[in-house]
Length: 185
Image (tube, rainbow, N blue to C red; front, side, top):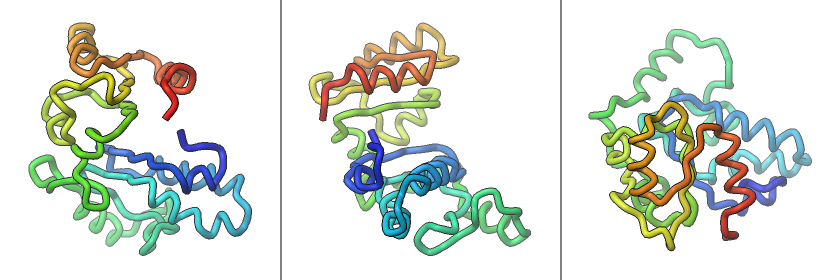
């Protein structure tokens, strides 16, 4: 999905919608690609990762030190003012404004996506409404796959019917399915 080079990363149209406040995935991607990038690629890497389209539904603890505008390094000890700033950037469910990326609402990002991969999401109806997961999906338009660890069989059956998606108890199997069996984009 992301490719295996910084150039593939630059060309990617991936959007990541997360309910997490932390910056773990951004940090992981930066470190992983920086490890294989040459000096010029490392210089532009923050822009490329920034263009992936992270949407933190309930806010984010802070920007990372390498991100545009600067911020706090990953894992750095926090001072009192850092903790206060982080608490002010987190949003409760009723405080969350219209969310999106580059002016495009999340619901539209999902509706226009050709592939939707859902990981670590409990499929609570309120959260599905929050991000605009459709009530049903035309299976010819999008491909859906999801991890379903801990979700009851009856709910999985509802989700499979609603989204015509494959669900997997093991997250690795989600990626195996995507890589091996999905139609090329």
